[in-house]
Image 1 (tube, rainbow, N blue to C red):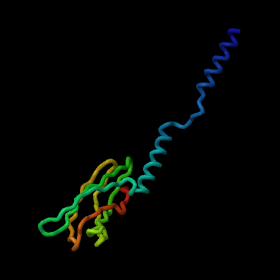
Image 2 (spheres, helix red, strand yellow):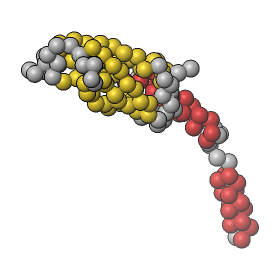
Image 3 (cartoon, rainbow, N blue to C red):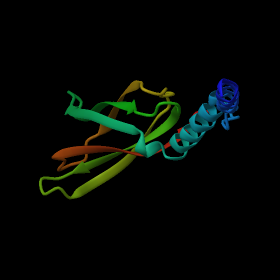
Length: 137
């Protein structure tokens, strides 16, 4: 009886050591990481945020200063196009302009920008948005 118990315990422990998971965790991790990077690279507008402020200088130029933050974890972006919209008192668009920020924005980092433009007549407010960006490398 003891022998049967010992043999069955040995067989059970041998079966438990023979795992069905033959894929190494690092391979699975690398595949998931690559998939995440591809998603980030294909959708830059989901991961880039712009904040900023504007004022008029002594030459009656509109000075737009801001920051672009990259919320992605793996993808870097470059050539970020910022749309600047000049609006009147009622909120109607007077004029639009697109400027490019040529810096490379690494994952989790922030880049500052500053544009000086001629202020359209009747401008009451200025809005800034990101319209496009290219993945780096």
